[in-house]
Amino acid sequence: MKNEVKVVMGKYELGRTLGEGGFSTVKFARHVETGRPFAIKILDRHSVLARKFHDQLKREIGSLKQLKHPNIVRLHEVSASQTKIYIVLEYVSRGELYNVIADKGRLSEQEGRRVFQQIIDAVSYCHDKGVYHRDLKPENVLVDAKGNIKITDFGLSAQPQHLGKDGLLHTTCGSPNYVAPEVFLNRGYDGSLSDIWSCGVILYVILTGDLPFDEKNIALLSQKIVRGDLRIPKWLSPEAQNILKRMLDPRPITRLNMAGIKAHEWFRQDYTPTVSFE
Ligand code: ADP
Ligand code: MG
Image 1 (cartoon, rainbow, N blue to C red):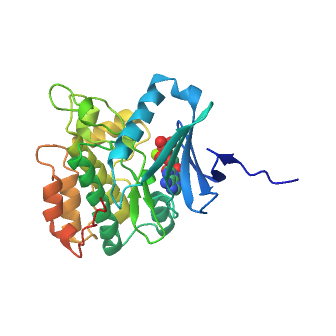
Image 2 (tube, helix red, strand yellow):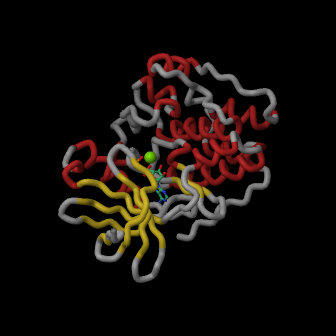
Image 3 (tube, protein in one colour):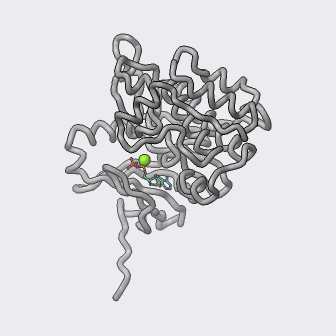
């Protein structure tokens, strides 16, 4: 049987599936003329008619268009056919940070620090542009051929127009294990500090291979998170223990903010900021 090659948008040859999510399939693609690799996120047009998916698509494209940073996946173009919507993205070859950690068990403090510094560089750049990611987790952090990281999946992201009159965000969203206590509490939250909480959970996972808060039952999980029921392994360096404790502070007011993270002793070791190519 002849292998059929599917070409979309008149110029990209589709390959294997890279990932599948709630509202999309992500496929490897090659630009036929140049041979350049891409990742194309494909959505069904009729499912986008549903309000929830329409909103996700608007958030994803709206945020990605504004973001040009070496540690954030780059939007190449967006297009639609009669039945599909295509979001053409930079291809990130090693896949999810989640799998890198799962393969190794955990990363050393030195390796983990380099990954974490890049995540913070990217997230702090987003915040400076008024974009809050709101779904930061190792599945949405990709690793490229050089071992550098690229943040992706801005489908839940918030921009200034999403802030309430109180200047806070109000939608409870994200992946439960990574959600900040104030997001569960439903009284409005600062998107910067809730993203920082999620980065704290990611750092914990990077350095230990375990989740800091884990319960199958979401009510029990949210109780643990809100209580700040946290155990940090003593075998980590005192500086690593300290930054984790201060990022996973259940009180947003006293939690380490971006400036605090960048000034922290553990973060500052071997730090070379990523230069933005804007
Ligand atoms: P969803 O909103 O459905 O979670 P994502 O944007 O997170 O969609 O993509 C789902 C998965 O597809 C990712 O977790 C990753 O494994 C893969 N993926 C997404 N974008 C890329 C990319 N640019 N390069 C390589 N793999 C990608
Ligand atoms: Mg995702």
